[in-house]
Length: 482
Ligand SMILES: Cc1cc2nc3c(=O)[nH]c(=O)nc-3n(C[C@H](O)[C@H](O)[C@H](O)COP(=O)(O)O)c2cc1C
Image (cartoon, rainbow, N blue to C red):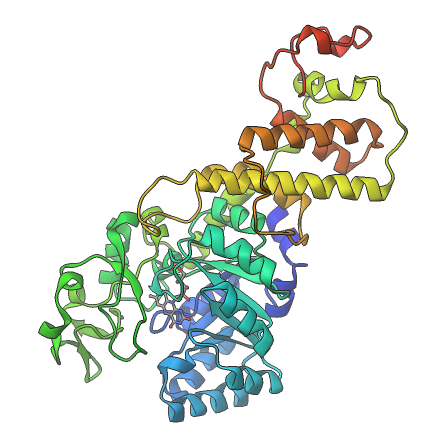
């Protein structure tokens, strides 16, 4: 598996101690030891969602993950949504338990980051803006998660992931993971093309057998589409003000909050659940689940059934694997005239040295990345966030970037100016290849670049007579390169 092999060496995977570039979001209530253990068993990474949970539960859940044989996992805490006294006890607990990684969310709490780092814990911060990403990095976060407006649960920012992710990658030096509305293998490739070192899954792993969500919530996810989600501030009890959540649109979302004062709609082991609290239906609850917060990201339309976490992750990986370019097939004999045509243009200039090759590949990567971004900008019109963040079509070019730009950090989030469209970018990419390929010795990289040249060639493009080279037998037909 190319994805699995390449991922291990990524900085984010090294820091987290996982093999796969897939992370289970720290979902309060839902991501407990059963789900974290199931995710860890696949080689992905999992966070226990422990917001506002008592230290005894943290201890219990950490113990269960360890009893299942996993030593690399994390705990998610939210300082701004936790009483100071409880937060202090939670921090004591994770430090005493030597939890390897802690993920934090909402306002950046520098003191908490410092305390965790001093204890040798890897700190991950989920952020919703470039400014917050910078603050988190300055505070000492070693990984940031860029959370797009498409995310399920609490949503920190207002920016679509396709814009936020490359901007955050540009702004910080630490590895960046992408979150919000992700559910497909093509999402993994596209996020990587925009500079992410991995993806964070909430909703997609909430809808699994091992999540602690009540079956009611899971089944509602299976039946829902992206446009059934809504960003609302209705569910606010227990949280700082101005904390919007993405949930399924249900009748209570439209209710005025004044009608809700103190209304109990359920219970969890004797604890009352109030209408408009942030509690979502859990296995341990009873009550009017339809009136609780049914968190869902915009990837929910891709969730067609409840499966095991291992199956969900395996499906995403194999989708990504299948979307990677089939270099060998593109270089099959039938296509070789197209891919070689440019190499007989007559201007043989000697072999390119490594610096030239690196520079050409870097320029090529920029063109491919621009094509991915332009493809994403073709997103259907509509309110931001009522659709998944990435169009699957973007994965075709993103797959090439995976092959060329592993561990290569994109240079800038801004699309180069000049009004260039996708076709113009493809043309520039072809020109780069045409200049480079004739000057490269046989190698794996050259094969890959040749295959890309085939992929970029408009099928059956007619070479104008003026461009035909009489001495090149490959140009006698009607296929050309640029
Ligand atoms: C049910 C649910 C509960 C969540 N609870 C938390 C939480 O306690 N802490 C946190 O940092 N993020 C929480 N989130 C947000 C996730 O960290 C992540 O940003 C989000 O799930 C990504 O979007 P997706 O659900 O579309 O994959 C929650 C999300 C969901 C769906």
